[in-house]
Length: 523
Image 1 (tube, rainbow, N blue to C red):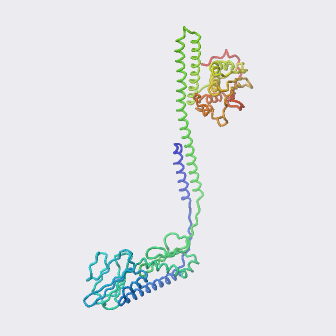
Image 2 (image 1 turned 180 degrees about the vertical axis):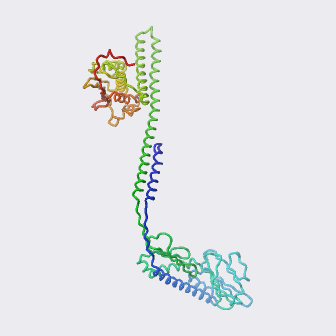
Image 3 (image 1 turned 45 degrees about the vertical axis):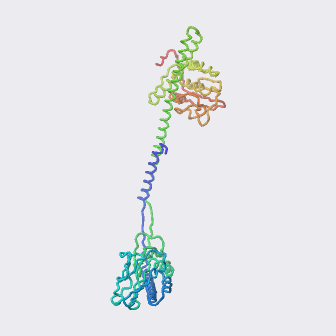
């Protein structure tokens, strides 16, 4: 994530939370409740209860028939009957034959899970006594002591049906609750279509659950909250439930004042986040530019100082033997000193501007004299680069302005031509006084400045044509300082349209002055 986005993301999250929380606070709900029809519900309960009782009785009858058939039936026949009866997992028959007890074990599904052992109390010892179902052998001799048909087992899905079809014979059948429920639920889901028709047409809301908690039937539209009525129905293998809900319509409205307040706070938070992000982005950009500026200034100082040292050493070596060469070297030293002076002036001006301590010192002067001095200081370097200078100076009258500021602006414009437009081999300089303004135009025939850079070149630390002049040096302050000085003098420095190269125009107030000689020099 970009560093500038770090300040936006928390504010955006806070704005979303405020908006969501405001919506919840502003929400108003009105409930309209319609009671369920109790008479229809009771009719359904009676019909459902009677059908469950009929199914339980019918299933018990089938089990009793299987138990009676176990008295004289053959094992293969009993297996077929047991497989045909839904839910039967194990059939055990204990028969007393004199003093000996014989037993028969029939398991319809041999591949099913392990079943609890069913044994007599005086029979074989079960492998797992804690899970086995032990039947008291006394019932074979005294059947009158026992009348319970259904027995629980240690297995949660199984129940035991015990029956004595005749004296000396005990039949135990293990029945699966889940299989019985599955068959019963499949039947009841179709059977309930008729009893539920009046409730469906009336739009009632109800739910019928099986003993295992599964939903058998769900009727009606959306239900709210706990059930208004719960009717339990006991059956052979568990309890069914009929749940009924009252009709409930919820009308939602929002308090406009709370919603507007939340929206306003969310917008303020979001706007604050955007402002903070932009400020941080600008701060990071400015910090990076200043680091780059320091590096460039160091380079700019380093190059002239190296040239100064080299040329002074060479001039000292040929001072007596070749005076002309020494003079040329000293001229180069003077150029480097001028270059350092301009660099120092720009850095000091920028520093004073940042501290808001930059002050102008207007004085009487002749603009053309100042411009000529600047041009002459640049002439050797420009001519050495093959740049021809054409000047049309027509501002020879005395005016009042800051001569140092004019000199610095002009020097920065000529320095740009030297650095970035040397390929055009031409520099044009024109000045005039017009309607109380000094107008100075500096032109070149270089590569020009793209439209996308026309305003950026006046931004601090931006170098002219930086993308296409990788080898050019500079601090990126010249044009920025030039425009700032021009505006402080009440004028403007701007880039004009030009078919070839670049053309800058300086326009600053230049009121007439009586005599520049009589004005004190700017300290």
